[in-house]
Image (cartoon, rainbow, N blue to C red; front, side, top):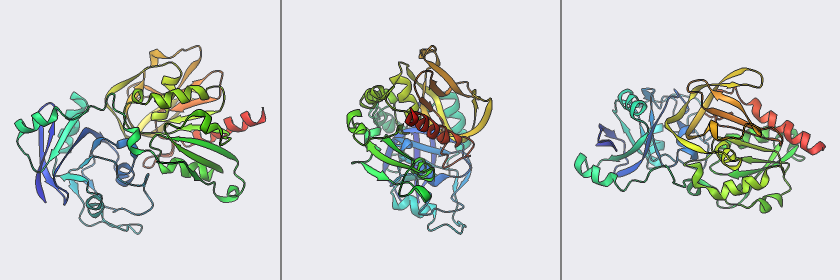
Length: 368
């Protein structure tokens, strides 16, 4: 282990020790309030460009395994905890979290006062940070901070998407004859979204962000899904433009970044939240049946509620913590999207019924 500093852009420093990986890295530091699910968090492409602080003090007690991954690798720029567990115990574990982080060469720091850091981010907002074992001088790090890019205006989607289209087949009784074919625009899609579609009998044709609407239609899909992903939604106009073309042509469902992209495609605006929503305990109200679900969330941007045309768009989900938009639906076309993560991984499964709602939209559209 080696001494390390976490230097924030406002000049605040937090000190700890790194694991085997040393050096220097930078990104936007955010906090996650989940008590478990660290492997899913590490492998969630939506965290590209960010340093994640876990608010729960002991991380790593159940190790990691080969199943609970949400992508093909680790995407966080750094990982900050109070204490790493040295002795994991779980019948599914194949490796310790420490070995996993070292294998992926993640700058992981323990000994940080994560409660103090979390309170600081809540009061001041998410901000850029540098983790370093080589340079512990705040004055020197202040100069380096000038070169660290902001998340606003940055296109991180291109860093995490698939390089070429691929097929994720349906499962079970629908393996040979899928109920529906879903075109998935990969902006950093989590595997659990594809797993749920597969369990529901849908074959997913996954295409990288930047694929044209005409190319998507060549697959003859029954519906279009726009995935989660990292960064500023306004920085991916090449996805927004294709989403606009799909309006009125296909049933559309979006999650997280997909919700923000649909908000922009339907004429709205987005803005950056003070410290974002990252965790597995956010209460969301579904106004369609007054249902309240506890949801998993991971986003730093949000659709501006006042920017949407209320004659065409209705708000169907609201965050009960801060009243921000958590879901929208088009009044004329079969389109809806949500800001939270109904697929969980990690988190509660309260909102997984939304996938069934999309199945119904595709079924109704096919009957017409």
